Image (cartoon, rainbow, N blue to C red; front, side, top):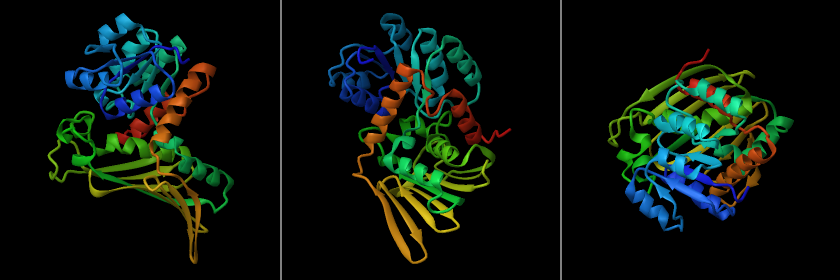
Length: 320
């Protein structure tokens, strides 16, 4: 696998993270494609000599074994389809798309061609989240009754050296905090509590940071096991937060993704269940390892095309 030719399409922040992580894991046969000459020049500093500005040319010339689709959300489906046609396995950044159009066709091609297709779900690979999963399975601290999630950060300063108004997150097509941040939360909550049966999404536009997409949003979900989840999402928090609280009949489990801690709180006690070292990149490394393992042994990715479609339907308010 380490000799596999890997094409990364999109050299923004997440694409660059994947490039660095692939290099650190020993993958050297990397090719990068981005329409921005500036980004291509920046990535070349990592020692990658094979660079393209056109994805069609990159696929035709390089014939990669694996493609990481890291370009803007509205380009995910066409890029993934081209990659499958070229015979590659595909890793698609979240969300799978901004629309359901083309998702079923993509799944059909994946199945027919017997390729591995995974959609990003990096928080599922954090040690704190894995610890929480294990605790919930064993009902150590009671049965979940209610869940609250707060995920917010200040978009204008989130990515160094990049104008926030030009990122995919800022756009009306494929942007906005629901598709961007909500895709993380809806996916991992479905893992914890089952598929979403009822959803309500309310978007807010503050007009304070100069973007076209919504900067704030609230979501209310009802899961297959009866748990209600409330989600607060925003691009305007001056202090970043990503906090998951699960209320049981015994107390509250609190996972702080940014602080890398998991705590159990009851009426008169607080118990630290997990404390990590705060290295958030570890979950991205584990995510890539999982994807590569799926290619090697044929196992099912944590989020395949069909699961990603379910997540997208919730984000779009299109529950059957």
